[in-house]
Length: 192
Image (cartoon, rainbow, N blue to C red; front, side, top):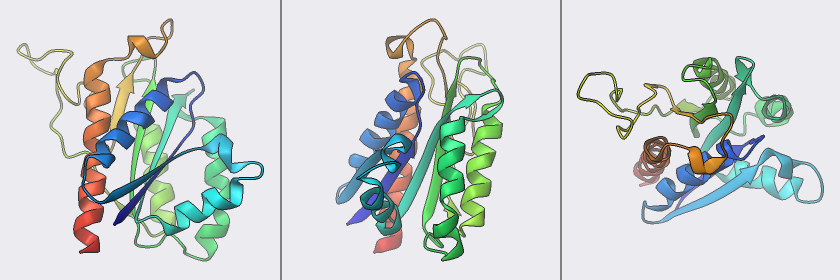
């Protein structure tokens, strides 16, 4: 059984909604166990159990909103807290992937994904990209296209700042599902 852990921060609910879509996608791959973990859960009584889930995972997918051109502060705090796993190289050779959301169409989301790539590289992890052509980039395209925001190294979504999760684009959530499924399929192939 492949084990996929999704660890995320969400300030207003949009990235959590995206994380749940990543989880749904991973869960479609037969024999995959998925753990959805908020960085808020890494403080308190359950912290040790959550760190153990990450240590036992075959793949870890990181997700955070892009705030002020970078990962959110809560996600950065989590990233810094992985130093113990890094020094013991506990995550070496695990798969890694990432996703992010912001209000602006660009919103410097690439910076957040690159932060995740660097984190994974420091841990000796193997990055899994989105493997989708950009959508909605031609006159025949639409908001319904997968990868409408045009990310390559991870799933990007855009949500209006004056709307809750009900205003998120279905295509962005389907792109997140695609990422989760791709990571789970890759983890399953590696385990066999």
